[in-house]
Length: 482
Image 1: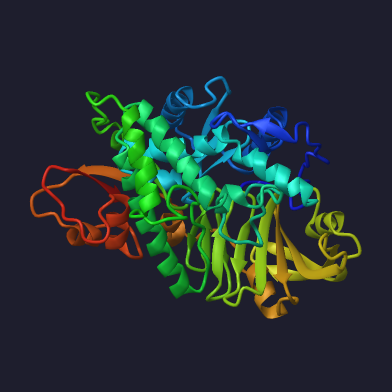
Image 2 (image 1 turned 45 degrees about the horizontal axis):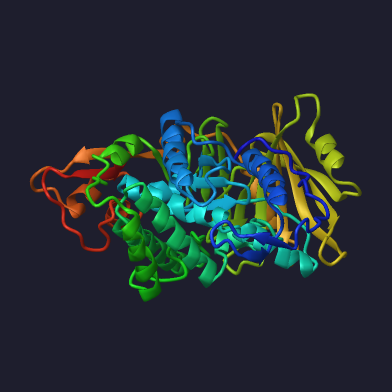
């Protein structure tokens, strides 16, 4: 949870004009109904700035350079080699990758955790480059503009539809995919680009299987826990690994590969991801069930039992089991001079039923705020509280179809506190650790020694591409979670 203001202005590109109703598709050479390349470059640059305001780079220059190196090699052999591509590794546990118009490609460390070799990473990046070279974003934008849609939301990598508004103009394509035909076209193009760089195209099908296993397992857990899960749109969501069309387009790319080239990365991918953060980042805070721990902020927050907690770089969200109510928390640096009442009144006009309540940090100021729903034009009321500690103000908002019961809402704000000494270890993040399998090691025995609190054996199998029943061999390299 980074320091962000509660009231954030989302920049908008304004009313777009179709500079060219039909533009040449660099892949096919034919004319497609799409916005111009000039629009792509301007839109991509502005979207990129929005994303980088919301998310940070993963703090590992060597891994950042590695992702860029792979991406630039693939882009150089693509249908738009002269386009300036930007490849970014985001510090997010979400399993995702996506591309913006104009050549901006993003990969999360969350998706890299489930890969085991460089060709897997190349397959995912190649797929996203395919969306750019085929101008899928520009085509979607043109179609949506004709439909009268010209608003842009912020790109947020979470599974909550209330929290996540990507680009309405692009129809959510960056997160949910562009449709079967366009995704398949990106599969074909990605396979071609990796083959031209002498990667084994069969590994593209391999990463589809690995990520599909992760998606299915995550979905099963989410259903059991009564929540939704964010799934990566690319290379597998629209088809299983044994899909005939997928098999055909991927294997057709074999003709581009030098048959004498060696595609083995020599263990480079595993070496570079050794020590990479896994799951929640310690810098952003750790979620454990309905509890949240943040080491550097020295902060503990507890939500109602049974609520699903989702941590994003800009806010902390808890969703009720029936998904009709939510509590959101953001932090703002405001200085020590302003008290909680002054801060809250500066953010919300006409605050009603305002009062002080006791808090573990001293005092909190709370009331009923009212904002206009941009979709309906109606006024929506919600509970809001400011908890002040030193120069920081924590804003706790109760949202939903109805105002949250005071008892639940106030308990969250009242019980926010510093970490106890016994909780310091709970606020520490986990990372991947590369080991060599010893004789007698099994997933079961390694899981018992693992720091993974839930489904340790299944998690170890998934991050090593050996789910559900792969067997270990002495001497092989294996990722643990520590």
